[in-house]
Structures are given as C-alpha cells and as structure tokens.
Image (cartoon, rainbow, N blue to C red; front, side, top):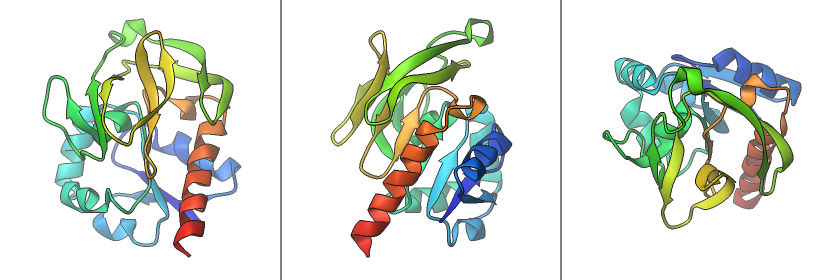
Length: 192
C-alpha cells in the first residue's frame, strides 16, 4: 500500500512520519503524475487558501476533482476545508464530501487548544489539536458524523473519504491514520 500526502504546504512531514510508524509507504504528491499508483491521499492541515493557490499552480485541482469518486482521501483541518462541498463564506474547492464547513470556526490562532475526543469506530480519548480549526455546520446524504465537540461536528466520513477539524498528525495518537488505512484495505478487498 502507498498513501500519497499532498505536498504543497502544511503538515506534510508529520503525516508521512505517522504513516511510516504504521508500516505504510508514502509518496509526496505535487503533480498529476504523482497520483498514479497511490491507494489513498492525505490532504494535510495548513493554510487552506495557500494550499488552494498551490493546487491551482501545480495544475492539480481538476485532476483531484476527477479522483473524488475513486481515490480515498483523508483531510485534516485545512484538508477538511478542501474536501467540503460547500464553505459558509467562500467557494468550495474539491467538493468531495457533501457538507458545509465553516473556516476558523473556533477562533483565531490564539484560540487554539488541545482536547480528547470520542471518535465513533476509532476509539475514546483521541488526542485532538485544534489550530484555527474549521467545523462542519451541516452534513449531506451519505455523510456520517464520527465526533462532535459541543454541537459542532469535528470528524466525518463517507464510504470513501474521512475528514477531521483537528490535527491528529501533531500527536502520537495513530488511531485516525490507522482507521483511514483500514478503510482503504476494506475498499481494496471489496473491489478484488
């Protein structure tokens, strides 16, 4: 198995290290050719506007949109924003998950925090680092809410994709990455 990590900006190295500890090979994705031969793609946390500009610069937007029905994707923080079908205050990017996401929903950089969450199907006491984090205001058909913080949905999935508001890659908790790997394995087993 090879999982790509979108390598234009953000916590790229941290995701790679997490995947390596789980015994998974990784590839940095910066071009359409880099998408060939990967089993899944992680869209890391970072600055969503900058990541979008770089996706455009590298000619990846249309290629990624073509892959949303076939390539499992896991978006963390800014990656969640990229995967949303709608954003509450700006145009959407990849439109992979039917949900409306609000950017910087928990406040500015100074409002960043850490907490523990229950994530359905993953476990309890999941370490979660929120940095200028978004949250899901509304989910559409086929989207399961896996975790909430107060009334805000902070982790969701479809049969193909996974997204969370926080940065699991900035902790030592590997369970969300392992959950994504298992989603890919189950999908591959069904398609064989």
